[in-house]
Length: 105
Image (cartoon, rainbow, N blue to C red; front, side, top):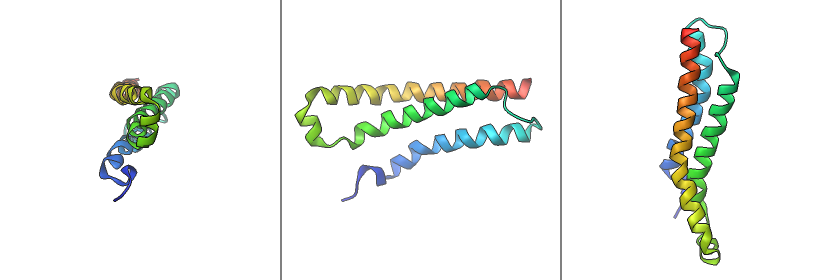
């Protein structure tokens, strides 16, 4: 038996973070721009994406003994898992706005 982190799903969760980092460096270069329009949006993309991955993975790796000892931890884990999609969408929107401003501006 192997741990949850070694399952193929975790690589699919961290993959978008790599894509976010590469796209803010490559796309402006392909558009012959010196840099992205807003470094603050790059930082927002990073933090929202990181929070999305953490809130998606952390509930999956909680030990069952913790969930049994603290019944409210299951509710918090489910809520974090639910919000991970919205955080990921926020990261994608920040990236899209930044790249759009870079292309147009």
